[in-house]
Image 1 (cartoon, rainbow, N blue to C red):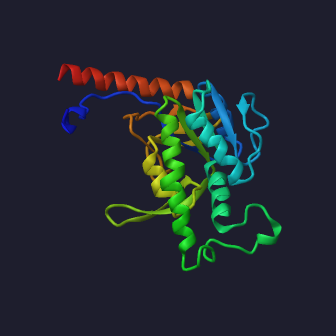
Image 2: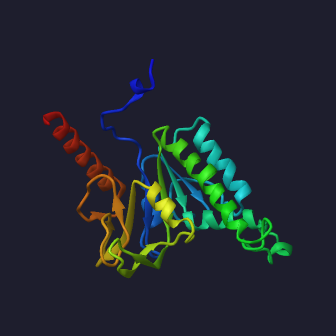
Length: 245
């Protein structure tokens, strides 16, 4: 068998992985609880009001990591892993790298002063994300389990390919890691209110950072079933076009 015999030439629908971000109270955690057979990995102690399986409040990286390991490699029946929220998980990881880990006597430790200084702590943080966090989340996805990263919203400055600088709403993710995690995601959805309705925007606008790899162009209700329906519709259309072509 040569290496070329492992070449892939057909599309397939894998478990989605992505980000849903928005302001407090918009319904992000409720959205996560409505996903298929969810478990919420509670990193910010804000999931007590939802009715679904969730972890205890995980306030330290050393207790977050075993949960991620178990969800990636142990037997369980969950269909969606919801990280609530990715910004708080990354803060816990940053504390681990800086050597704080919730200890008051270590509160003066910072990323810039850790691992010999000179910004080495930031590189160690990136190593954790590149070599552990994202591969572990991919191991979950490769089991057919969806991964949804909930995030708060912040205003960020972006520069377009034409060199135009603009400010947009975007997920509140560590600035050194935001581009990496957005590139990793199949979709980035901005949750917003339109009157009494809650919507999910999946295409970038002049005010919102968003994307999706499914060709979805419509603004959807903030509901997991609508998102899955739109993904399946686009996949069916692509498969049909491929067959007819």
